Amino acid sequence: MANLLTVVLNWRTPDMTLRAAEAGLAAMEGIEGALTIVDNASDDGSYEKMLAEVAARGWDTGPHRVRVLQSGRNGGFGAGNNHGIHAGLPDGGRPDYVYLLNSDAFPEKDAIRALMAHLETHPATGFAGSYIFGEDGAPHRTAFRFPSVAGEFEAHLRLGLVSRLLRRHIVAQPIPAQTQRVDWLAGASLMMRQDVLDRIGLFDETFFLYFEETDLCHRAARAGWPTDYVVESRVMHIGSVSTGMKKWTRIPGFWLDSRLHYFAKTHGRAYAAAATASAALAGALWRLRLMIQRKDRGEPPRYLRDMLAHHLRHGFVFQGNAQTPIRPLRART
Image (tube, rainbow, N blue to C red; front, side, top):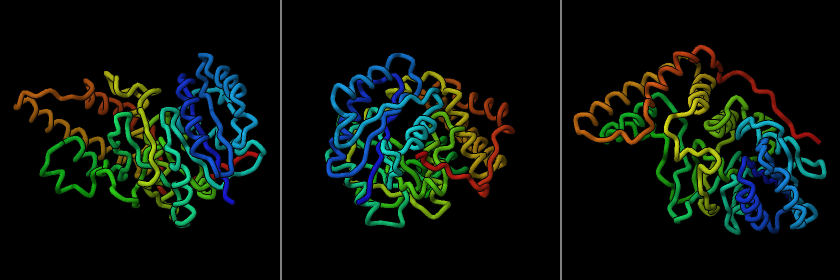
């Protein structure tokens, strides 16, 4: 019988992380495996609080053993999850599947089982992710196409005619009505084959936040392991609790770093420059239209200027090649 390692990453949200772990344990009923909580060097008492609470609830000796690990550094989403995946199962074994669950995501009873069943019955699929909805029940867009120059132009121009012409390049897809193949999925609820991770490696820790799932799914697809969106797996997600994205007043440097690194790594520096130029041109045209219409931009101030300045400062630093082999990172025993 296949087994599963669930990893929940915490950064300064211990109560919510424990709530997510509790929902994850309930959804793991009937599945062999364990759950690991990784604290990403919160330095606010999170680690000690979760360690004590796990013991008090008896989770550390339960049917799905729960461990609380300290990563020792806040290396971001990918690094924290890598720490938990590297640790493997508590008995030193290697899981067949790894399931990533956000600390602000709460799977319904059959959500995890649905993902595992899909991967078991679709051996050519590498990763599988859930239908995500908010506290209000509204569905979230979490199924995407890979970013491209054309996709950057469409996203920043925001013009219906152009969007229709470039519809096959729009990154955020309409919410699928049925289980289907996608390019990549948000990592709030994502199950991965350990065999695939052994082959392509874990998260690229150059990404601090954002684009790390995009890169991982791209590498998997390049190696012949596509990603599927599974509508039968339902997970409630609050969103942006740790990152504070909804309150951003300026685009943070780590987002710009991740965007540039993704394009340069995946397609090369020339393509990354073309993507930034495409976004800047489309964004300028959109702003001109808003000025004429006297409408508010509705985005963080200095967004385009920050993107262009960042690329000019760092565009020759970020490198990558889609053909460069990636050394696999295997779970420690």
